Picture (tube, rainbow, N blue to C red):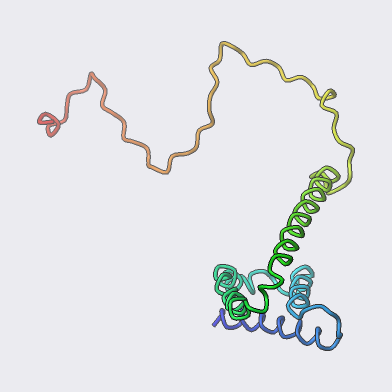
Length: 171
């Protein structure tokens, strides 16, 4: 029953996006309006992630299935597309490179601008101003960090001075 409620929420947001697209007459698809509405509802905590988590995971996990109609349409209309195929592919390639480059440069700029101290802009740290790290003590061997074992601890072995148990003589 939860999955139906989650589907209802997602589909209601999709319908609201389509209605907004038709009402505003803007050249923005209803899907984009729906994503903006969903983002705003999640951001302002009108909808919590738990309310749509299962259906979202299902839709994302089966995303390839939703590209089948587009692929079939391309194959069905290939005669119409073949005359402009090379320019389309060049535009797709160039815009992909431009978007990736701009995104990478912007992300690097933002990471340099903001740090983890509350998101406030700070000047970059001067590596020469860092205090020197003291050298390791050569008499102490380096130790690797140990993770706890998922197995229970082994029982202790008997000491050499203790008599053997009766059943252990045959071993």
